[in-house]
Image 1: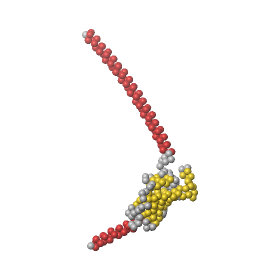
Image 2: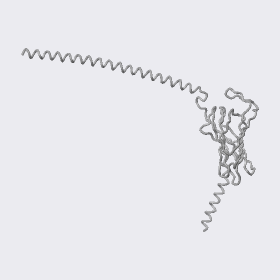
Image 3: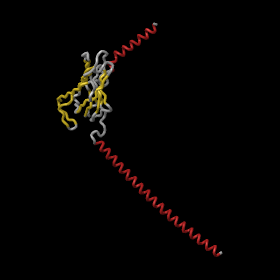
Image 4: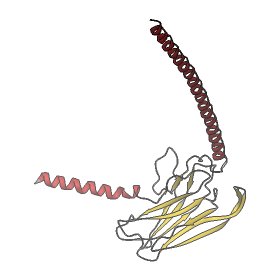
Length: 248
């Protein structure tokens, strides 16, 4: 009996630890579909889990970095949610791919017009964004999550390299190296090189075919001459043998 009580108490304690530690792992995050390469465009998903047992998430606000503004931000429709895109004037205009920007998207807000994200569930909010900056390895987005009981959770702490993850980390999008040819130049060089290689291979193949043809013609001529000589020899031998039989 005592053993069973001790085991039950152990299970209860372990469950309590898991429940208490859950918020440290379940937080608003952002991940690309495929890759998010510098200088290119990407579709990203903001994943929002519900961390409460007695309330639903009814609103999520994502603020965009102003030090690396994005020229294009396009949300995909999400059933049961209203979407608002906010643009703001930049303190200092920037030039992206030859275009001067004096305003950019500063925030995207999703507001539930239904039940929202209920306890035990999560929701993905997709966006198409670009062009991604080429002078940084990551973009930090600060998010604010609002529950149906009016509780507000701010995911705004910026993770620092070499340090433990903060209690309320902001979503961070890691950027991969720029893909070759995303401006078209590298791809053109590659195509040109492939064309030159193909032409060289074709010329070599033609030369080999010509050489093979010449060799075949020469061999045929030699065999033809040998055949004529052998045939003539055979005729002469036959005539000589016939004369010998006549003389005998």
